[in-house]
Length: 291
Image (cartoon, rainbow, N blue to C red; front, side, top):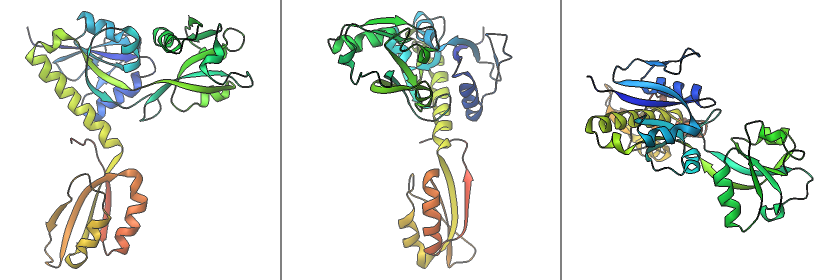
């Protein structure tokens, strides 16, 4: 029997972002919306769609060899799994999400201690219980099946909810009074899978390529020409990932410079490069960056 890695793909809000990430990493996953077993163009991987909340359980039990889920759900489960790598991406952005304690605007609640004896609704029940217990605050934590933002003040006094931007909370007239935890997606693996050398190699391959695809999203390549006499001042401007590559050109008075930098810095860097004497400046996208 050929080697197979059983890989869990998070179903729900992370599904589309995860499939897009795999595509950038070099794998095409095809989910038709009806099957929980999407196909993938790698005969060594077998995919299964699993809710992120349940991923740790199936990985820990050995039903899946590895899977992608938020570290929040791993902590919530209380199960022991191995994090292979963190992957900072979410439904709408490339940053960590936050689980926050939120209350109605105008409620008068300003801190966790103000909620003594109150009802708090959340999906993250165990983490929320531990949070209030650590502060010595007695609250009733109720599980929420969804639409948690609409529950205060009628069905709950406060909520613990995940947010990327806070816009949904604001739209429902809620204010954040504390952050309980930050979370990001992790590639996790079970102990049985990590006891198999072939599966370890395959999991590490996936981790490397997913991480490379994520790292490339915020960076761009930049190439330019510069006179050798201007090279020192040109290089002083570049916030290079590593030392820039310098190549000789057919014109012995010039060199080509190739480097990688954060996309957010390009608008500041390019005018400075031009003023320092750089010519033929070209910015280009990156698919993967392996550090």
